[in-house]
Length: 115
Length: 111
Image (cartoon, one colour):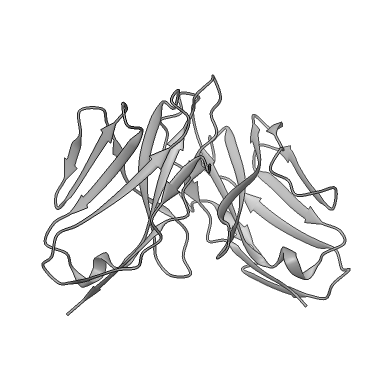
């Protein structure tokens, strides 16, 4: 299995531009999570999906952020317009099951720099 | 109060030392607990789950104290390769399944 695949690995953009981050979870996993990691705040949960349905998006910073999961094998996180304070590493993670004891598998992350 | 709190460190120890990290959590209804390891510029990876009775995996021992709402990780005979950030993760509570991460504790093992 290829694991969780994220793209791009690095993204450098200018303030005001639209940014789209992509994630392919592990096949068969029914939970998908988007996290953001910064030195100041650590790993923050932005949103998570169960069976492609958004369950909790209370961590999404503001309306500039949106996430979709059109099918079981693909999710996007979009920032429009981007701002310098959005610079961070964005991780996607997936897991299977509902018991809460399941291991999270993370992608390699997208390092986003907004200039 | 943050949901999951850890001492950020860094803990700077020589090879062969024993080092322990603690993590406190605020939700008394939390159901499951984990330690993840994150190397510099890499993604977090599961190190071990934490069970109520305590559990061991080689040089690593994890313990849970529900009454005081903390979990611990003990590393014996530290190796240079143990240098990383150790993240405490708490799941569940109140019927929700939302893994909440601490900010991590940095460990540096030196020769």
